[in-house]
Each structure stands twice: as C-alpha cells, then as structure tokens.
Image 1 (cartoon, rainbow, N blue to C red):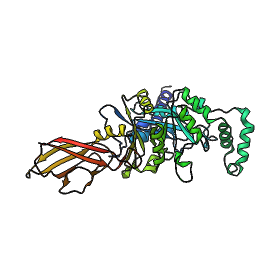
Image 2 (image 1 turned 60 degrees about the horizontal axis):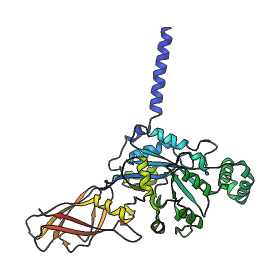
Image 3 (image 1 turned 90 degrees about the vertical axis):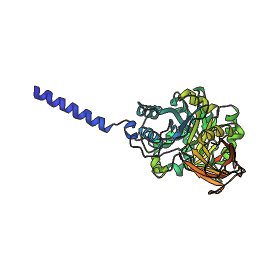
Image 4 (image 1 turned 180 degrees about the vertical axis):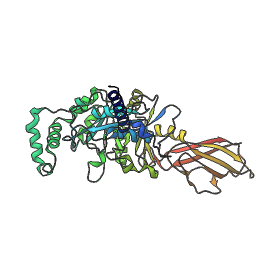
Length: 415
C-alpha cells in the first residue's frame, strides 16, 4: 500500500511539474526582454502617457497565435494596454476552433495578463464590405450582442453566397455560411449595440477601401459621426499612414488612432530586435485605469507613433514634446560668445529638429538629430554673452496637421 501511495505521489508531482512547464503564463515569456525594445514615452505635466495597441487579432478570428502570445508580446514591448479585437463575422478557423462565446479571446488574454501590469481591454471588430468596412468597438461588455445569427435571414445570406460563388467555392463552407449570415445584419445595429454598452468605436484602415489609397468617408460613416456613434479613426494601420484620414479626424473631431492590426507575430511583422516598433497610440490619461483611458479616448487626447513619426493634434502634441525634449545645461566655457548647450531627448522617438532660432552652430548643421533617450551637445554662437537662451526648433518627425510640423521653444538660464 505504501508503495502505491509513493507511486501516486510521484505521479502527481511529475504531472504537476509538467503542467507548470507546459502551460506557462504570459508573464513567463515576458522575462525574455531585448534591451531597448520597450516602448517608453514620458508623462506630460498633466497626464500619464499610456502606450496602447487597440487593434490586434488571435486565432479566435483570422490571427495566427493564441491570445496569450498577444499578451506576451505586449509585455515585451512594455505596453500599458492592449485590445484583442477579433472579427465577429469573419471566422476562418471556425471548423477547428468553434467558440459560441465571442468573449473567449478577451477572457483568454485577460487570464494570461494576471499578475502583470498590462491592462487588457475588451473589444471586437465589426466587419462589413465597403462602403462601411471594418469598425472596432472597445470597452465593450459582451461581444455576443454585437453579432446576430438569425436563421430567418438564411435565404438572404444564401443570395450573398451565390453572388460571390467564385470566391466562396474554395473556402470552408462553415466559415462562408457564418460570414454571410452574420453580414446580413445591418452594421448600424451592431454599432448601436456597442454604443449601448458604452463602447469607444473607431473606423479601421479607411485608406484600404479605395483603389487610389485615399481615405474617404461614406455616407454611412457620416451618419455614424453625426449620431455620435463613431468616435475615432485609424490614421495608421500596420505599415500604412493616411494623411487623408488625418484630415478627416481633424475635420470631424474624431480621435486619432494608430494600431498594429497584427495577425502574425509582432516580431515577424515589425522586427523589434532590429530597432523597429509596432505602431501605437499614446493616450494621455489622468490615471492608469480603464475608466480613465476610456475617458481620454472620448476626449481625443492621443498622439500616434508610427515608424518614428509622431502624429496628433497640436493641443496633445505640444505637451508631449515639452516632456520629451529640454535643455539640460547651458554653459560658457573658454569662449564668452560660444555657448555649450546640452539638449536631451527623454523618449523612444529619435528626434529630427530644424534650427529656427537666430543662432548658428559651430559644429552642426541646422538640422540635428537627438537619438532616443540620449543627449547631444551643441556649440551655439551667441555673438554676445547672454544670461538666458531661447532656441526655436521645428520638429520634422512630428505632424500636427498634414504637412505641418510643430515648433517648440527651448529656454534655459545660462550658468
């Protein structure tokens, strides 16, 4: 009997150890961090700067990884918040991964983020063909209420399939039937259902729906904006940036959003180990909570970081730049008219700056670069001995309107 108990005890220990090693939490993976990979921007004088990716996918729609991998990647990139926003209607893995509960992806991601600081936001992607396109709803309460599979609509769905017979014939019919039946339900109903849950709703990649790449609002989008059921727009998605979408955001008072829309591994699509980064939305929030982040999004307090370009409204951009760049010291050394100035960059964006001040430099051209989280030294020809210095720069890798760069003034007392 004692031998049997010993055997059972060993079996339990081995089994438990195997499970512990095989089913690691996302936090276990996040410890393998690459130096310099974390995305870091300073807080502004009034707000915390939240680094977020609000549009990602997993195998619960058309992504290629489990939700815990999305969490692990977010932890490696040191994001503050992430949303795994599965297509409700487009379910290419439906035969292999059936899940009637459309909240499953969120639940898996939320579970993987336990015991970490990562905020996981519940969201879904409402998917229709042009002219409506794809629309994300985040901070939702129940994704199941954003999709309708009423069997009474089967005849209408069948007509859709027959109209696209050439495209459907090589596809999994479970997926085709699900997509057709769910697409019959008007997108406006899904968007209204999201708004009833207090969701923040934004238009995805509007530049993709036009052959010429020009983002435009359809009549349906204009109605959503007028009804205040559409609140934001992606000016950046994956590796695309749309000046036209930026203009649409400014003209219609929509929140500016930038996302990875990742389906593969982040490391495959954005190669962070080579110094690249996913697009993110910087959200200026009073607190590091879901409620505060949501309020900041509704109040349009965002800047997008995309391929080292900062994109945002002037009222959000200027406080961010003020927190990022400053004169650390200004000293006359041996020459009373040549000032040694050290300017620091406290962010992960490499700053490209054009000198607009009255001063010229001894060893630099008017266009200078300050590497991420580093400082540079300038020898400034002041012509006379000063007690205070003001230097004006145009930030070339930032936009406050299409083709319009912000201008900052750096001030320091001279020692």
